[in-house]
Amino acid sequence: MSDSRRPNEGDEELSPDDIRRLQAWAPRVPPDGFTARVLGRARAQRAEAARPAPAEAPRPIAAPPPLTRAELDRRRRRRAALATLLGAGALAAGGGFVAWQAGVSAAQATTSVMTVYLAALAFGGVLLLASLLGGHGHADHDTGDHDHGDDFHHGDHHGTETHTAAHTTLVLPFLSLRFWIFGLTFFGLTGAILHGLGLAGPATTAVIASVLGLGTGYGAAQLFQSLARQTVGEIAADGGHIGREGRLLLPTARGQRGKLRVVANAVTMDFLAETDDEILLPAGTPVLIVGMRGNVAVVERSPAPTEPTD
Amino acid sequence: MATDERTDDGLAPAAQRELDEVTLARARAGEEAALAALVDCYQRRVFALVGRLMVGRPELVEDLAQEVFVKVLQALPRFDSHGPARLSTWILTVATRTCLDVLRAKRPAPEPIPDSLVSPSDPEGETARRQLGRRIEAAMARLPEEMRAVVILRGYHDFDYDEIASALGLELGTVKSRLGRARTALREALEGVP
View (tube, helix red, strand yellow):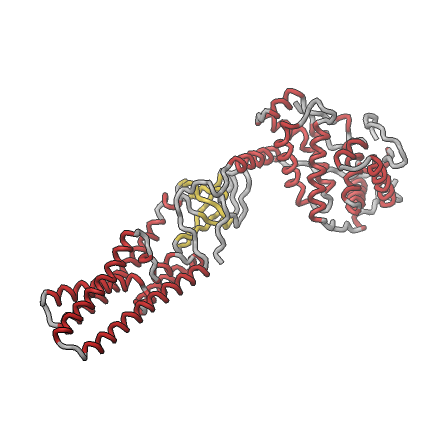
């Protein structure tokens, strides 16, 4: 033991021979850049501590959170049930009307047909107005749009999902609430005008109103789905990525580029990623895009973990 | 300012230098250059201590050493430079407690070191010295972590019994008994080594 060591003599004390032997165990030495890493880590922790709680943190843009598979299924079942109910109700009403028509006089029939057109117009019109005044109301959430737009998990199979959504809309248009709203409105409007003004006979009016109603409903469903696709395309504009959340595929740190995957509206996008954080952001870290430098996303650790999608 | 930290490995107490008062005051005020000087001054001692306490877990050493300094820098304004403890003792106490917390939580099983690598053959040469070092390392790895901490703080970092007791939260008598048992264990492990 060296002379400067403060004495603690006793049977338990290490002898000079012990000390000499212990010296053979070489110490670990700090690697180059250790001080800089320590200071960076301390700075990052201070910044993290100064950052407001995630609940209070302002989000740059209100990117819709990805829906879970269970939530998607639940919504799909609810829409299908509602659309089926509407369809069944319309069929029952139509059948009852036809049966009732057989037993009434021609004058009564004229009045009854007009009532049907007006009822359809009123029903569809009220829903259409409600959806328009309510902004992104339920009318925006038909089957096709949701299959296309919110399926976070199937982002990698975007093309397949889009095809499935279009196929669903083509084969089962009555599953779309929007189809029924527009269909009933224009069926009722056309029938009321043709029948009320006497521009066509009852049968011709019924055919024209039905064709126009079906066509308008189908067209509206297709049009809104197409608009949704265009919205997905617009997201790809540079500034549109800021505020989106994603996960790192490759780690990044200051001066070290990584790779980021963002899934937005079923579109999977990979970016080169940079961060100004001093500490390493490992692969798998949920991150927030806070800026774009050319085609490189500037990211920081997401204030709150991305919601699990399953 | 710190000087010649390159010669400081915890084995030459006379050479251990403390950060000067002016730099310490600037560091406590948060001045980046002074904080860097503090880390530079004590990093070798911290690395030596953490590396030895975490024997068998080398992959954790740098991260823990960083964590130690982050804690030190955060708590630096509360360090009483006129109190009884030297800054180095305080920092090494933080390092010891940080390592013991991890060791208690993880209870790592150090990898056994093969006997073929630890048999001294030429005590005069560097090879023999390295082999002795590995033998000591293997013996240390077998000690319970708190006993290991006692002998490392005493044998490598010049802590006296009171400082060890304070750092580990032990009674003075416990420190002595653990050091005695550790010494015995080490002597048994190094039996036959000149």
